[in-house]
Length: 194
Image (cartoon, rainbow, N blue to C red):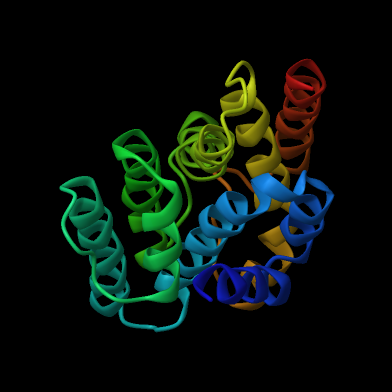
């Protein structure tokens, strides 16, 4: 049941990843749905409140749940933790813990210090998520971190209009030429990672 709940959560909140899981071999889907449902929960945790402390508390809940899973004890009850307990190991929990840790930045969003800082954020969120998803299905890890990082950068650029609507500015520069140069560099990184 927890895997079905994870699939439904991913279907509603992350249709692109849902489609990619449906295209995967049937025996790999449960693990991918569990990892991607975890990502949905963690990525939205800081955004469901205007209070940074509440966002941090929600992320800490997930950090603690992963720690409980890593120690082999019973993890707090949640459909996603139930699903994760069926498919993971301590290596997976460590990879997902890095996603939680990086997401703490979202609790008080502001402009990244520089483009390297922004790229590190994409590596710690999307890059680590791709690595964890690959690990969960025993896929070769070569290039997954870089590919996931580049996908994360594309997602960040795609989110900029919505963030601007919310009056949140995250890009380290407002200069269109600077942004275009960085975006071009990211396109080249994505091509190499593919």
